[in-house]
Length: 250
Image (tube, rainbow, N blue to C red; front, side, top):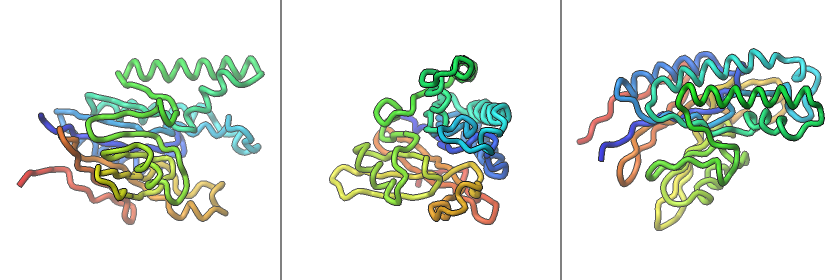
């Protein structure tokens, strides 16, 4: 059975995306997958939706939702062009608009959110993407030995938590904005890859939080074999990404 090429990236955060990383990711995906296509996975937080965050301050509430919408949609439409299988795993930020469609008292806000949810459904239909909810059980996409999730733990031990939780094979996730790896002590190989982020590493709300020092720009890519996988990490170094694009078997 022919190996499946894949690219997985997440934490774009709409208009908070990092232009250098997005440009490199799209150029890499186009070259790596080529005309044959492959699997492209958006690991979530495609949008930021800070303006509708519960407890948002005046600055966040005043931010443009339209710019956020437009930036996220532009990215996903371009990213999905390169794959013949397209997966969108909603993140906790994306889920804000879905929560707002059912959990707010204001009819105006609820109708806006319902329109937003319908817009996301339209994007998925037009790009032939498959969308999964933000849910640690239902928001899981599996392809042979690889599992993809948005990410459901933000501690320093997130990779270990995901390796333990999602069983044999490897799980790829985002959410923490960090690049990390863990392999469990187990008879059945259990690995987890925390693949980094595609958004700004220096948002104002993280100025007093040391967790932000772990944030790195990057994405994952590789091959899914009939019985196994090869996962590689693209990582920014001094504003550039140096990654292999041609795989050979020896």
